[in-house]
Length: 317
Image 1 (cartoon, rainbow, N blue to C red):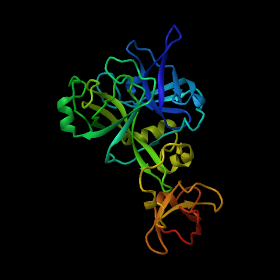
Image 2 (image 1 turned 90 degrees about the horizontal axis):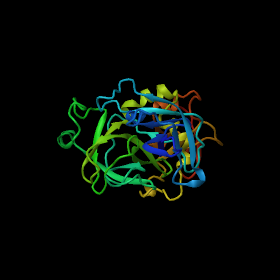
Image 3 (image 1 turned 90 degrees about the vertical axis):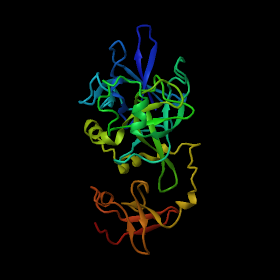
Image 4 (image 1 turned 60 degrees about the vertical axis):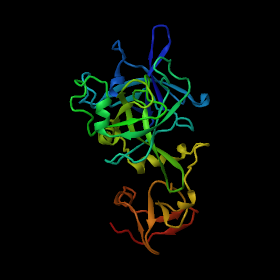
């Protein structure tokens, strides 16, 4: 989680937006966070705020707004902030992975922000987590109080609508992530960002918020950052996700069977989380073509969740 700030003449920093670190040098946020109400651009980003040992304050080098965004509608509300220097990756500062699929993930999701907890409050000093659920497009459009000229096409395919039962996303949440949890081959819980806070109704529990669907912009993000956002590329940094206190609450025994394996290109080195495979009979495993056609060539070994390694004899694409 990142805080996007504006340094005032007094030296005070107003954190009016949030964002997500998606590499050592880029923050994913909302396009409308490119300036405040006075037209001033943000100049600083704070990372690792929830753990003072790892907190970092980094100047902003550039803000890359999606080329189709304009100030008159609520569409294409996505931007990238380029940092003046690389972030220091630590247990409290870790790049996020992005949801890649065209279909939105099923089940509940979680919004993460330092925004206000009530309409008339100041921003919260602690990280807030709000459990959200999907709302149908038609249901959402009925209750949106936004001027219809700002959303002339209604809620589009590159947006989605959610609501929270007990809390809602509020002021200062703009640009903050909404994510879903998934379990990797070793049973670790991984967060995947599938939305960016864009706009919504008043900050009242039960009302709706509209989010930019991240999967629709992965290609643009990769072009701007010159970095692959694929699951395989992202999970190379998987170790920084393994934070104490965030174990999976799922039945890990389901995932620690002999049917699940990782792929290795070297018997002694490499991460079993880079690519996975599923045993479909006593001799063959099923995986994706992209996992076995990398610049490193075919994988050479499979590794079980117990650390057992077996050489690969053939790969069929």
